[in-house]
Amino acid sequence: MKLKRLLVILAALLLVGVNGVSQKAAAEKSDKMQIVTVNIQDVLLSSDAGQGVRKKLETKVLELQEKLQKDQEEIQTMQAEIEKKSSVWSEQVREEKERDYQKKVREMQLKQEDAQFEIQQIEKQEMEPILKELQMVIADMGKKNGYAMIMDSRAGLLYADKNLDISEIVRKELDAKLAASDTKKDQ
View 1 (tube, rainbow, N blue to C red):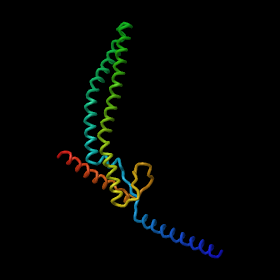
View 2 (view 1 turned 90 degrees about the vertical axis):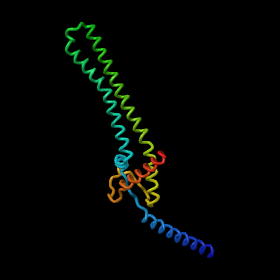
View 3 (view 1 turned 60 degrees about the vertical axis):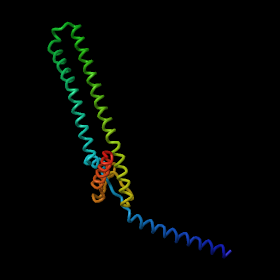
View 4 (view 1 turned 180 degrees about the vertical axis):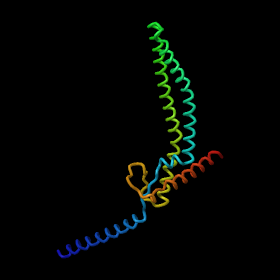
């Protein structure tokens, strides 16, 4: 009986000792690991690739606006004509002109929606490879620098010391990786 009690006490002391050692090791490891933040939006907007996409989108928007401008002017001309001449026209002519005007307005709205959809598709297509590369850059930096966690500073983070923000470092690394990737494609 005394032997069983002695074994139970000895086993308990060993467990407490092992648990204490593992907690101490975990605490030492967590002291070395750091939680940092990165502003993904700023990195994308200020990166070379992100600026290239922005310029491409701006060019496409201007192109689509020019196309839509002609239709918009035609609609304004129709509206002005209806306002000026409707009192002179017969009921039938006035109704026909108003139907034509409404039809043009609906067509214009559809063209605007199509243009907006086209811009969104171009943005998605252009940004997808950049976002994939950014994700790899962030993961590599986390492993390389021993970060415990990298958080997006705009995704619900209420406070973070500015010294923890690695956005600029991530942007430079992303630019370097994408430039190297473009160099390989060109060869």
